[in-house]
Image (cartoon, rainbow, N blue to C red; front, side, top):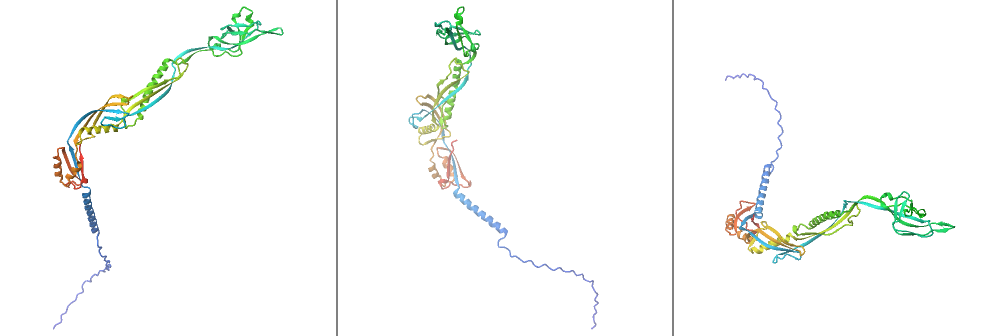
Length: 419
């Protein structure tokens, strides 16, 4: 058998790549029991469950039926008389009397005013002259108004009758006697306010007595004046009186109103004010630049409480409409006018006019029992068929999809619509 010869031709050398060593295998961590996604699912599930519980709770605790009822109404007018008496201790509906109360206040005002009058004030200077008798041992009598002339020619007169004792001889010489007498200037004016001087007696002129009987002053003559001075006039006093009387009355009334609290009603004509006294030390023609005047006033009022009036009005209306009717206090219009006011007797007679809405009473307690568990539509139809009701609205709250009235009367709210 012939041998087969195979020619082996060398191939192109193969290029070998150096293989990088494989990284070591990461350690495998087993997956957790709950993934993040599962935790969110559980959380939302819990929230949903809580919301269901809250909804159930609200359904059984908060769910209510709100029923608005418009009853049949009519406007009625009532008129009556009411007496306010300060002798009444409490409200008397049958006799139409409510208690009143007297408030009183006094106001004393004193003010200084300027005098507007003017007067010429004249006064004679006065003083003392010592008159000497150096004429004889016989007494010398001088009558009232005996004239004395000073060295500078100012004339004075004696103000009283005087007798000058006679002189005495001593050692063969006549010693003059004397007496002090009061004199006043013949004319008013400051020019007679002279200093010490010697005086002659003109009545003795031409006789030996002229130089033997004479006078001397040892002090100044004073008090002489002639000037215009302020003077209080009758008009000043009357003007001050008028001004203060008006102010005292006004301030007295203001003080009285401030004293009365808002709980009382004060009628404008139920106030009486009077002047108690007017006084001034000044008199007409008093020489004063300013003078004071004083006035005292008193104010009193008869008032009554709003609460007593409102209670009387409520009770009076209820007594007129009967037990099956009620009235809307919000719709009430009250007008009152005083007919007579006698503050001395402490009485006021008021004329009252009352306008209000009247409607039939609705027994809400029995009505709620009758509506328990009814559907809202049935409830509405039932109420609209009541003769004393004109309109009804029924709602569930806070879940409008609930169609039945709760079976608990505490969860039924009825509101009367009277406006």
